[in-house]
Length: 183
Image (cartoon, rainbow, N blue to C red; front, side, top):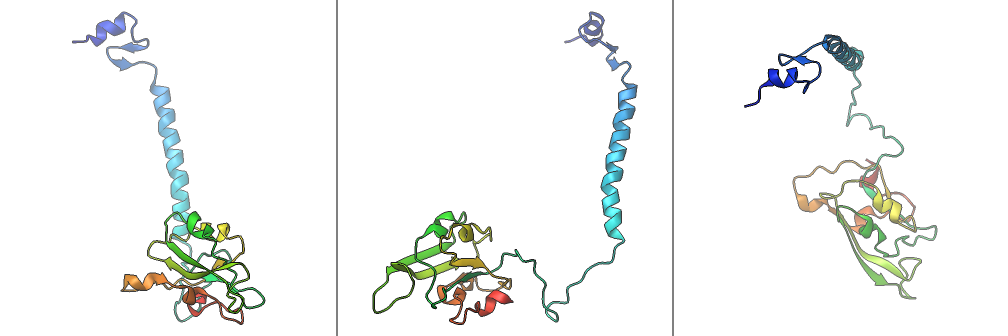
C-alpha cells in the first residue's frame, strides 16, 4: 500500500501536503470564472433567438423559397439541338459515395441519334432511398448533363417508387425541367 503522506513528505509530490493541493485555490477560482463566462456566451445566443419572431412557411399554400445552391431531385439536361447531354461515361456513378446511380450505356447509330457522343445512357436510374444529395455526380460530369433541381417532394409509402428513371429526370425538348424537379 502506498503511503501518500510519506511520499509527499519525501518530495515526491511537490506542493502537496497531506494529499491536498496547497496554493491552487487561485487557479480553481479562475477556472470557475472561465466556465461561467463560457456558459454566459453560450446562453446569450440561445436567449437572443428565443425572443425573436419565428418564421413560418405556409407550405403548400405558398411556394417554398429555395437558396440558389439547394440540392434537390436531379435533372438530366439536353443540348441546344435537343439531344441528351449524357454520353454514358459512368463518371457520375463512379463518383457516387452511396452507389445509388445505375447506368447502362449503348452505342449511337447514324439513323437514331440520342446524344452528341458515341454512346448514350440507355438506362439511367437514381435510387433516392440511398442518395445523400452530396453533388459529387454533378461535379464529376464532364458534359454538365446532370444537375440538382429544386424538387424536394420525395415522400412515399413505397420504397420502389424512389428509384427514378431517366424519363422522370430528363428535361423536355423545350428545355424545361421535369415536373417533380421544380416543386
